[in-house]
Amino acid sequence: MFNITGVIKKKFPEQQVSEKFRKRDFVLTDNSSQYPQHITFQLVQDRCSLIDGFNEGQEVKVFFNLRGREYTDKRTNEIRFFNTVEAWKIEGGAGQQQQAPAATSAPMPDITTFSSGDQNDDLPF
Image 1 (tube, rainbow, N blue to C red):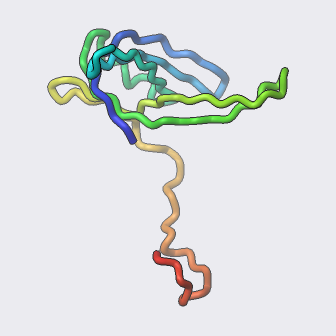
Image 2 (cartoon, helix red, strand yellow; image 1 turned 180 degrees about the horizontal axis):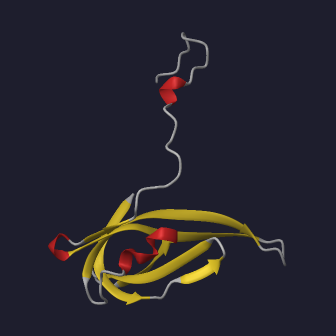
């Protein structure tokens, strides 16, 4: 998990990429170094509306994950890699906050209920 504070430079409209996938991009300007950095963040699925309550020019704190994927081009059979900076929470001034709704998928299983059958294994956990 990472976070960065900057100013919203541009908000883009939501895109329906496929029947089951939608995304929305926005650009944040990071002025913390000598040269401003304009970073594109992506919101996906039910998180697309997180940016709605904020305006261009407003300072916000964005919480995000870095995502990396491998892709094989079907035309050339060339393997390519790409990265996505995926935002999941945005905070503005005066305690204004937009966070993704709780996950709707099933909770992770409690790993303490699983056993290898060997109570004397040498694993440190």
